[in-house]
Length: 411
Image 1: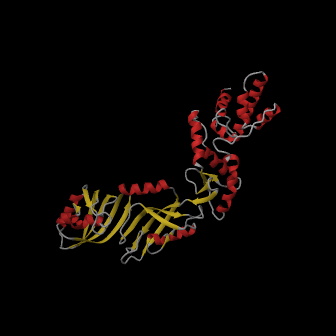
Image 2: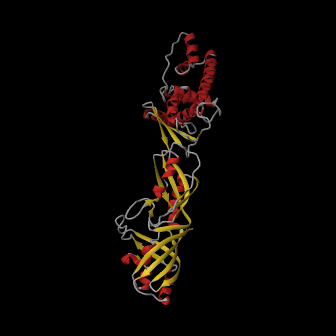
Image 3: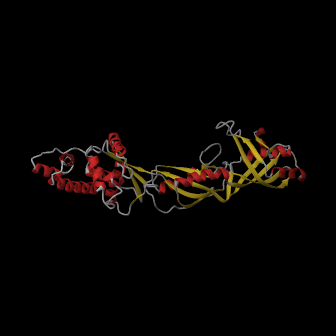
């Protein structure tokens, strides 16, 4: 009886449709739609109040309040010569009467899109949300379902009747169905498709994303085929760090994620790519969290580099052995002169863990640098006019030039 007393307390002040009343008691009567629960509550109230009325109790005002939103009660009062006009729902004003109808406007928008999962989002009139909030606060409702959630759920449920093999996914849907209940218009947002993989760069004339100087092509250019496979409008690459266009990426490769925007396919085989410059090996589909992890991981990854270095003057083996003093050192770098237009005085602190070297000729030596991700390796070698300290050039007291640079591994 506590439920009926509480429902009656609400109805005395606010006329509510079956759905809005049932939604306030969503924690009760599992397996029922809100309108079914609301109708059941009103029917039980009707039976209780009519019984009490016939026993002579003063419940006429309660019957009048219920009759505004319950036809059987209205018919009962009519039989007594009391006519009661039907009242619009205080919260939704009738908006919930047939929200499933919007599904038919969505279906044509999904034609030609091959997807697996979807979510429904709606724009609800502000005054509806405000009136619902008023009722919820006044009666301290803590476990009801919001009007917006019900609308989304009911439209989604209707769509599932027509979309074989599809499912609702609130966390990572392929597409988002948008319904504006103010204008009555529907739209579909195609979320990006994210593909994880690793790449090797075998050329010294391929950059990651931009063409400049004598760069022939870019990694972005090479991976355009993925966008075409899934019918996307454009694509973006997210990489765990980067190497200069004249540096090779060898070893096991560098992780990256290809983001295909507004695809029309969300499933299918991802072919690998190989030419004389790039080898791309796809791993599979991934999510936005992996992109964030990739970006963060680039700051802490340990990378192994090989550099071929030219000295301005001949060096002895004893002099080259001084390089070992830099193992385990913290390196302070300001934005290199070659890119300082981006952030002229940004300070970067990175670790150099291990160094190894071998002399090729009196003025040429090979240097191996195992270091923290994000170290400007070329600048660590030549010093960048004092913007990097300490540096190999500083230790050897000679001007150095990096002839070749390769990334051998990303740990």
